[in-house]
Amino acid sequence: MGVEIERKFLLKNSDWKKQVDTVIHIQQGYLCSDKERTVRIRVSGERAWITIKGESIGMSRAEFEYEIPFEEGSSLIGLCEKPIIDKKRYIVKTNEVTWEIDEFAGLNSGLTIAEVELESEEKTFDLPDWLGKEVTGDPKYYNSSLIKNPFTKW
Image (cartoon, rainbow, N blue to C red):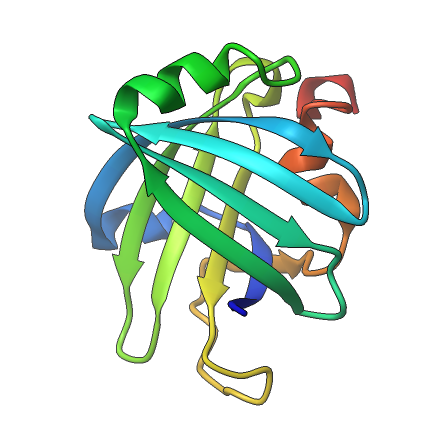
């Protein structure tokens, strides 16, 4: 079984943009967005994935992710709950960890979240100065919640 260990933060400024290594456009939707489990379809470039995640317990949750044919991913996006999440993901590498910074568009425009995946919950690292409030475990910042309660409606 795969386990995702992740911490999420808001950003207090745009200083991180000076350190961007890669930019990726992502569209993702949810076939299921229950609290106990999510089934996500993600399309980026010419690739697609299906991901099943269990309920979060602290920073951790079960995660199973599989690449699927692009054509199937594109078709499955059409079956997902609306709205579809549209975002740019910026990859920022620091000395210790790799940050994924998601800048949302559409109904979630104005929201930017930094997340880092860790090998263990005990992993320590220096927090960059551009990080703001930690929102790990706050369900309103889950992508699966943003389809039900978009950021522009807060």
